[in-house]
Structures are given as structure tokens and as C-alpha cells.
Image (cartoon, rainbow, N blue to C red; front, side):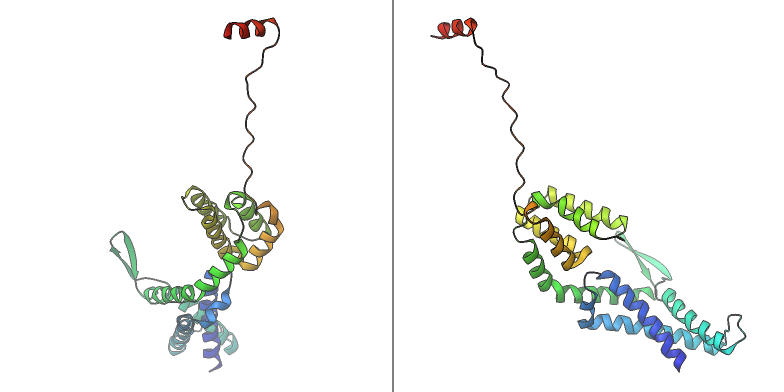
Length: 240
């Protein structure tokens, strides 16, 4: 019985880690979403089912000690369920997309339901956080400084995420939205990566640097030179 509990916990941990990786700014939001619990419990049940199959067929994986056999069986059950429920038997082309058909279809469906549940629950909270933090921030002044500062505060952000953020900020810069709308959209992009606390700290640190409009470039000095001397007097007399 203890082996089934251990295998179930291992499977649940795998499912929970997968969900938490999708909501790094606030993983605790998953606790209030029923579909997230279903997703975790399904992973746990899959690990228990694989362990039952392993024990029925008596697979010992080359071990001789009873304790070693039990430990290996639990580990293999957890890893096997991880592979089983994330694999597809074949793919079907629907329109322009290829959809995998197999056990992974169940997890993909539940993952999508969990995503929508979390998004609906957090939409109001995220809107309030971003508008509070980014109020008064000018996009034209912050579109380079604020993302750079936020990313510098993190030590282990993947390069692909940094490139994706740069592309998204560039798209915002080229859009026709107002400066305030761009500023709030920039806040949403950053809060997904660094979380509200880090974003608040970055905005507070930069403060006046990003809370004022970007100063326009100085005008080029005039190239017209005033002539002096006799030549200038003759020109003046001709003009009159």
C-alpha cells in the first residue's frame, strides 16, 4: 500500500510541477481551480495504475533485494506514467494543424481547461495590479529601460524567453495604441515573467526616469550665417 501512495505522490508532483511552470509569477493561484486538481489527481492515478501493472507482471528490473525492487518499481511507475500520458499513437491533420491522438489528448484537454480556469480567476487581479504599478509610466521612456532592468534582476531566465519578450515589446512599439495602453500592455508582459513584486521594485527604482515623457531630440542649429561688412551693406541697399 505504501508503494502505491509513493507512486501516486510522485505522479502528482510531476503534474503539479508542470502546472506551476506555466504560472511562475503566482503558482498559488492554481489551488482555487478545480480542473488543476483533476489534472494532478489524474497524474497520480496514472502512476498508481502503472505500478499495479508492474507488480502484476513481477518486473524486478534486475534487482534482487525486496527493498530495491520496491523502490525501482515506484520510480519506474512514476516515470512510465509521465511518458505514457504525454505520448500519442498517431497524428491527425485538422486544417493547418497536426493533432496527436492518444493518451496525451486527455492531458492536453485538461491542461487547456486548467489554463482557462486560472486565466478567468486571475484576470481581474492582474488588471488591478498592472494598472496600479504602471500608472504614470510612459511607454516611450520605459520600453527599453524597464524590460532591461527587470531582466537584469533575474539570474536564470532562458534566452528564448528574453528573445520572445524583445519581439513582443517591438510589436508594441510599432502598434497604434496610445502611450498609456502600451504601458499597461508592457506591464502585463513583464508581470508574466518577473511577477508583480519584482515589477513594482523595478518601477520604483527607475521612477522619474520612466514617469516622464521622453525628451525630444534637440533641433539642429541653423546653417544660415549672417554676413557683415561692405558686402552686406550693398545687399541691403539693393533690396531697398
